[in-house]
Length: 586
Ligand SMILES: [Zn+2]
Image (tube, rainbow, N blue to C red):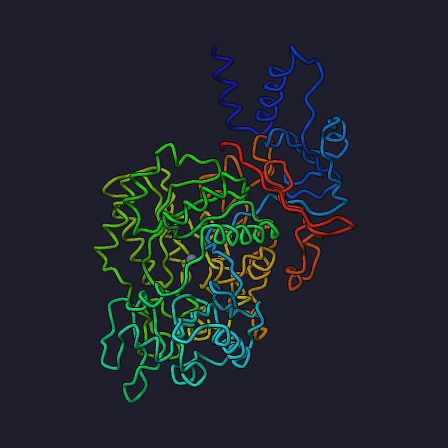
């Protein structure tokens, strides 16, 4: 008995014991009925494996059986296991890493932008790098949209197109359609006069709590709306709605795109019950991507009432966290700061919508329900208020391993990070200097070395999760890695805060084991280790052997989930392929 319990303890604590347990299980399962050893379902050989495991950081080959990694070692040792039904992938020297987990993003239905449900994509990836590009797209949409119907554009980048479009400019192009163009931050909108009118906003409308209506020197509303200004929802409600079939297909398109970037799991930072229902449908039909749904705080009652019900026990879906907002935007330059912004000595950002006692009560409610609080906060002043709320909850109701997390935590000098560390709070920082670096100008150079503080956070031992905040920045993982490593803005070539650069290995670590830790999944996911799920990515080149500014050129050749090929890039005579299969229980 003593021996057995001692063995059990060792099994939990050491890698090699994990291997032995798996081997023993196989003997039990196959030993009597079938003397032949079970062969793996999949082996990958001749690779350069970065495991993210300190005890065995490198390997050449992996075996996966029943969705679980059963062996990590040399090609010779794995080759000996190959059976008649084993799928063999020869990595031919390519780099193999754990599957990527994007710990904070916002999946959306991908519709044709000129179709009836489509919104204009105003990102540089979609070809908008000048004001003329933006207006050409707007004109094209006007040409196919009935007069009077709302036109929505998303993710324009003010620094590329020469500032935020004004109502007067938009009126000249769109006199007969209400227009709402959402900034890349998601925290500012440029709207025309018809949209202002429909929202009931006049020059005399006072600024609501948590938002602002920009005015010119004469007091006239410019059409630029900061943060939450109510009144626009009825306008959105007039848009035609896609049927359920079309919407599901648009989400499938989105998830296939994620798979093509090596993404095996995502954290949806603000899912509604309706969206989670879509996820459940997709998972039941075989979506292989795992979904960690952080439910919007407005639906906390739904979460508490439903999370333990049988109909919500769906393999691949985790309902454990609440997404809260306390604060505003970095790239939108609305985050609340202790000291003024560099471009305006009277501007500190926009105060959060909730007062301290309100956010404290909300965090307490999440905490007491045994849930994880994932709280959006960007400015130093906002983050401190959020940490005050977490501290109060922990004091009133101490709870081990709560893993509450700060989403973004963008302007975070060392004292704030140390506070996070002592409260055992995780961090999902932005990784978008490559796309939005120029927007940091208004924060002043003195702040750059503690914006997106990836390096300091890792050095302090804070769990850091890699993420895109898609569609704030693209979910192209290798582009995110490039940004974390270089911190160089593509628009102007400038490096912002070089002291916060991290290495390729560290960046990969945040996107694998780091994200898994934020999602309580580090025992089953996030590294290549015997006993963990067989979630594996094969890259076209070694990211450590390439000019860091070329990291984005590295492609994902294979995305493997639980030992099955979920995506294969067209390469070396192979066709592109997507796998859609059910997941096993965690
Ligand atoms: Zn977000």
